[in-house]
Amino acid sequence: GAGVSQTPSNKVTEKGKYVELRCDPISGHTALYWYRQSLGQGPEFLIYFQGTGAADDSGLPNDRFFAVRPEGSVSTLKIQRTERGDSAVYLCASSLSSWAAEAFFGQGTRLTVV
Amino acid sequence: GIQVEQSPPDLILQEGANSTLRCNFSDSVNNLQWFHQNPWGQLINLFYIPSGTKQNGRLSATTVATERYSLLYISSSQTTDSGVYFCAVTQGGSEKLVFGKGTKLTVNP
Image 1 (cartoon, each protein chain N blue to C red):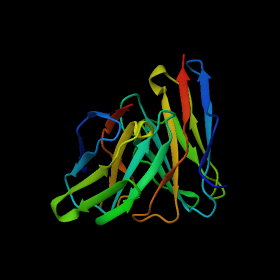
Image 2: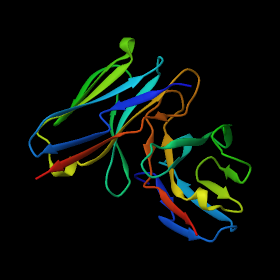
Image 3: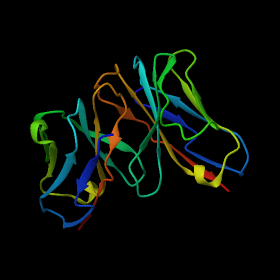
């Protein structure tokens, strides 16, 4: 596609439920990133994929968070046993390669845990 | 890790005014990007500028890597320029962008 696409745009879930957030990167981009943005803050890094493998997952806050990219294109961020503190905008980005490349962001998924 | 500081945190302008936004970073960087986050939350790429100067219409940016800062200039501001401007960098062998806290710009008609 023309840009990075994220679905859904909004997700409301109950505390304790499982959610999946999807990211479709720009076609041909091998690097994919997930970030989380809380109100009034800059985006914070969660995980980075180069191809199918997670090259850096140092930003995942705990083991309730997991992400996959099985075919090196679409990625899914999975959150188990959601907590109210997980409420935020989850942003996905992709870049043509990895090292020092320009990153392009999707419109984000606003997750609200009630 | 690297620290990214943006100033000012808030800026209010009248339409037609010029402004300068600053980004300081604490270590050498491989990549520096400026983004505009619009009221709908979309991060829009403004400049990819690890060093040097670039211009795009009313916007221009300069990064002085040796002195660890970057400047974003907005001339003849318009109400559509309102939003939050972020500076983000990568350093060393890391691929993750580290963002500043942003400058919130409000342009009044």
